[in-house]
Image 1 (cartoon, rainbow, N blue to C red):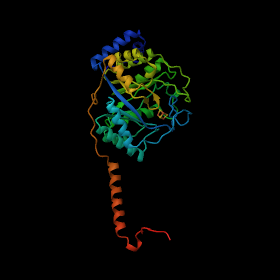
Image 2 (cartoon, rainbow, N blue to C red):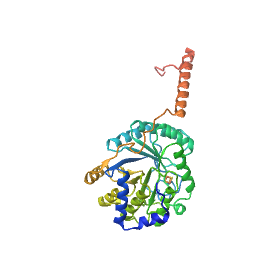
Image 3 (cartoon, rainbow, N blue to C red):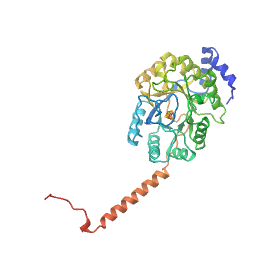
Image 4 (cartoon, rainbow, N blue to C red):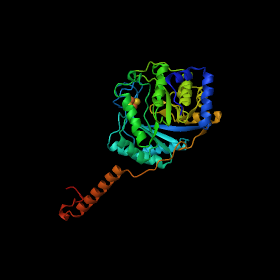
Length: 362
Ligand code: SF4
């Protein structure tokens, strides 16, 4: 992969728009089928109440937004939603939990079951659960996790203007832990948070410095939500989104570039230029975690007009094998032993001590 400098990427970003789109489209065609666009679904499996202070996020508990906090969804409802997303053409499901970090508790055991269940549906499973350590990454990998999303959001220089409750380095560590476990990495950023163009390029430079860049790079436009510190940010022009997508495509020819949040503010022509410039995935479904997104039907119509076809799952890598989860299996084994012991103990209770059925009350 060609290594670009910050200045080279800035020059690429700032060239006349149509030159940029043409250059990106040429790179895109060398590495991807330009008609194929992956439809992914994003499901908020645990919403709101997050202890972090990401300035763009309505799920942070400290901001007063309309987002209602919900506990972790049940495994059954998640699998139901996954089947629904698959029936609507999605080949990837990204499950998001508003956690600072993964904890080794019952909720994580349930997430492991969700990953197993979705992988068994032959969909690519991606999770975004906050920071995680190496052991947690291995458990997710063994459950059948295909990708882990952990965005850097912006450049290292602008990061402190956006988040104060964790460091840029923490994010890089989590990405590294996913990588070590053999999980495909999804990591990108948000534009329109008041950053300079240099920061947008700075984000790309963080990935350029990695030995292996992310296989998937989502590019989001800020959705300014009332009640967050960024509520007054002016929406970016769609040309800026096209420039960012195109520059990302040129910088990382093999990665999947995901046109993510902010599509509701773009018209069909703007999105078409993004596909031309190398976007090879969108998020489908009317919600992106908690912010609005075009409906499935609108996207189907767009695919028809533009002659796009949904990309099959695992086009960019092998489907992971779902292995039995040692921790969940051990818990189930202990529960079964305990139930058997209780049943045995009940049998041995003398008849006089057996609970009697009350047939009448005197
Ligand atoms: S972006 Fe994630 S970590 Fe940050 S506040 Fe929102 S839910 Fe929490």
